Amino acid sequence: QVQLVESGGGLVQAGGSLRLSCAASGRTFSSYFMGWFRQAPGKERDFVAAINWGGGSTSYADSVKGRFTISRDSAKNTVYLQMNSLKPEDTAVYYCAARGVTSMKYEYWGQGTQVTVSS
Image 1: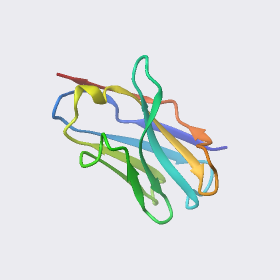
Image 2: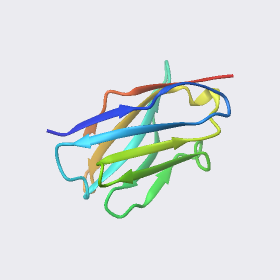
Image 3: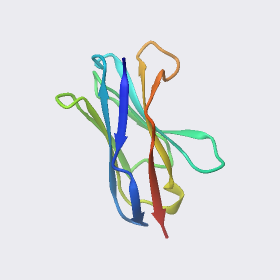
Image 4: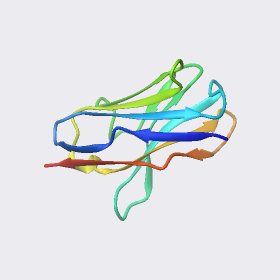
């Protein structure tokens, strides 16, 4: 059974940094895309970043390019989201998700971790 467990959220001032972690278990993820999404109050869940676990290629939402970095540590089966230069508009619940490389949608989701950026 696939499990994704996020951690690392919290309260930070604007301009600060946080690193989110997503511990993945239940299978080998070398043929998966791992993604980070976020949902602010009253808004839809939005894509933030993704990484091809096997090849390491990455993609980002325009709103976070140059500030956020997604990475993975295969030895620890963990995906990270390093968030720098945080803005109040980055405030949201952040979710980790996984999908097979041939899947059209993310199949597995974590429970989410709250990130709050104060101005």
